[in-house]
Length: 197
Image (tube, rainbow, N blue to C red; front, top):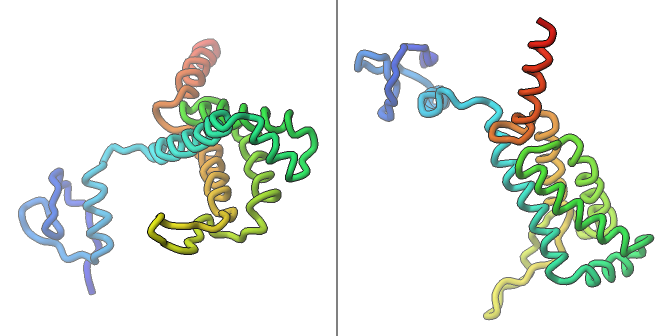
């Protein structure tokens, strides 16, 4: 039976196998060895750093969709909403574009994510129900590859669910480091604590 990884006080990174701090080897399972190596690489990485890549992809993704609608002209998106039978297509088109641009920016910079995520989630749910649900789960449906390139079928709701999961993780886990929320919330909390003392 293999011995578990134990804390040896080694402050170096040992990529050859287990390090016991004095140049000797410690028998470890492969998984425990991998975990030990990773913790040596990032010893001070705070758990909140998970939020940074989520903010970057979710925020940028939403903003890109909003910019795409503006670049094609809002009338094109209004026409799509009208064809789907949505009520007040012009109002909904502009509301969607603003939610994608402003909500995406809020997520990107880490500002007011719990508040911004509500209309963003609503846009995603509407997209699932009105467009993507009939196409099934998969967002990538390779139909053929020709001399002109790859040809894909209509996307399913997979990407919408990934965006929803990213928003949920940010709401539940916080906006993480390098977020505007930390600049606003921390000074207010510090001022409240000082006033109580």
